[in-house]
Image (cartoon, rainbow, N blue to C red; front, side, top):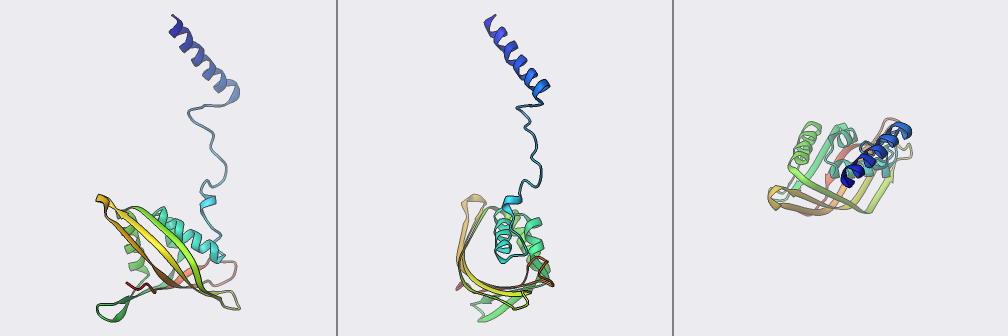
Amino acid sequence: MNHIHSSVLILGLFTTAFIFGGCNPFAPALEEGNPYQHLLGDPTTIDGFFTNFKNGYELRDMSIYQPLIDSSFTFIYRDFEAGIDRQWGYAQEIESTRQMFQRADLIRLDWNQIVVQEVAPDNKTAQIIRSFNLTISLGAGEVFRGSGRINFLLSRRSTALPWRLRQWRDESET
């Protein structure tokens, strides 16, 4: 009898809280605004661009990553075996990144030291060279770790618009 009395009392408390307090402890109120706003940087600043790039990678979210890439994008890397530079464009960048995001269980990107940051006087282009550490965990315990330097050319049509990555030269040693 005591057990039934306790259950009725608890149910009564929840019902009272729900009716009079508008509170349901099993469905808390939704917050107003964008709940992910603290994850996103201001894309009109270079720091905001790098914050969004990192979060796009770590969250494996194309809706964050893709808007950072300019439609005239070029990725350039050194093919050490052939002794030449190779490159790809926007479509291949988007597709290869989408596949990487789908295959990875975890991605961690740490931006390190900025070696060069040169912004044009009109504030519409910028070259940034900085070091990074990247860890990509795939299924079955397979982990890829890389580090090196990137050389980014950012651009935008006006200072009110977000920065976009127009050229990415991978300056890593391997």
